[in-house]
Length: 436
Ligand SMILES: Cc1ncc(COP(=O)(O)O)c(C=O)c1O
Image (cartoon, rainbow, N blue to C red; front, side, top):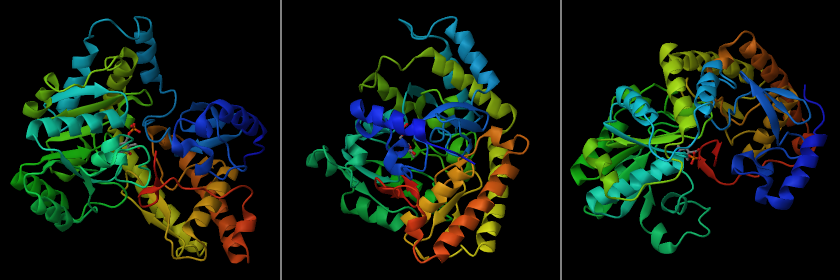
């Protein structure tokens, strides 16, 4: 059970004086949690657990927003970082680590013939868009999913303040699993589109034939197909969703889980397109930063050695089954539904129950925190969740939290059961997942 949040409160009051939001990331900010009844700062992590400033500990199903794929303080990754630290961090010329890591990505990922590195997922998705525009000589982008903070994507959302209209006009969103909607866009401007970029899977699986249909449309209209594998990468399969579903894009963006928490991303793809990196401008001070490269090599080697994606899928399949059963036992299946693949399960508010989805999500988040589980609606999984007792402890905490939420919804006034402010979503980029 978590206790007080005194130190969180003091740290937040201090941080907001100099840091807008008091955080670098919307989904780590106060508005993303039940402010007053939740930690806002963490002090340390180990395996699948984290500790907040007040000394409360949690089993963590956020994992730094998905990068921590092995667990906190993984001994092999940390040893690789320490060994590199003894040699240096950032150098005046390239290191051999770059080709070592690139070769692994080429081995794992079907579309990968050449590779460049970035720091954030947004670096990789934005590099893919620039490459596609350079390759096709066209400007327009069709997109589906969440792709980061850059103008070409965020201009299509409600958070477009600061993005010029001329840039917004070049990007058009289409719904997932709706190849007809994409076809209508392309048919209306057959020589206009440079790229189609989509998350090949988020919480909903691709409908049978959907990814193949998108591939065929891109071929027909001469458009570069980009898979955004920032979330799927190294979790659904070592080769990404493209390996899992057998549809190969022209380019793909990877990030998050690549370095078990170190900042690294990659843009990979067909040689004839990625080679254009020599002509466009994608170049930065930290692209070859060596600690992250060393961490990524160690992370991928370990994921391969233990078949990490299979471990993650087995954990997720069990959680999906057991949490679904508990939701039904507590009479909450009109409010909460299990979604997502085994690699990324979610317990998402349905919007059909006795309270607004945001109230259900707020109550769940509050009660899970009280029971020692830190999570949003998704179970972000890592190999350390497979350690002794972690899943059993999670299920016991869920069972108690569901009991409390059920009692709150039975009461006349569920909002009165909140011990802080309800969650205030930034905007919804995909069902049940907030912007990051
Ligand atoms: C699918 C997807 N693409 C791109 C990004 C952007 O990555 P980053 O936040 O590392 O820039 C994210 C981040 O959550 C993501 O989920």
